[in-house]
Amino acid sequence: MYQRDTLLKDLRTQVLEVHFTKANGENRVMRCTLQKHMLPESYQRSLGEQTEEKIFHKENPDVIAVWDLGENGWRSFRIDSVFYCEAKTAY
Image (cartoon, one colour):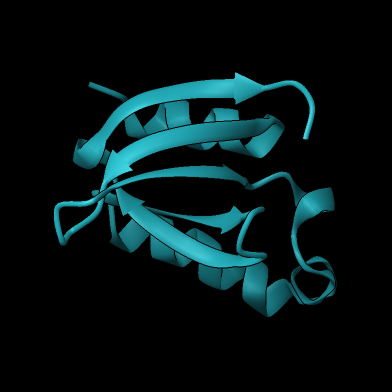
């Protein structure tokens, strides 16, 4: 089982390929990150968005919101649904 704090720390420093089961039972693979330089420009400029992300993670300990590099948007996954995770050195 993956630990929340470890996932968040890794997401803030690198791109992860996260394999998880969606709420509808489908398996999904997502390349995602929380590295500030890879997040949308609005996030980089807005302290409000940065605060919202921190509040979301504080108030939702079972769910992690990430920037999905494939979909170019915010997505989330339940930590207990992750069955494999690996760092990607190049994207």
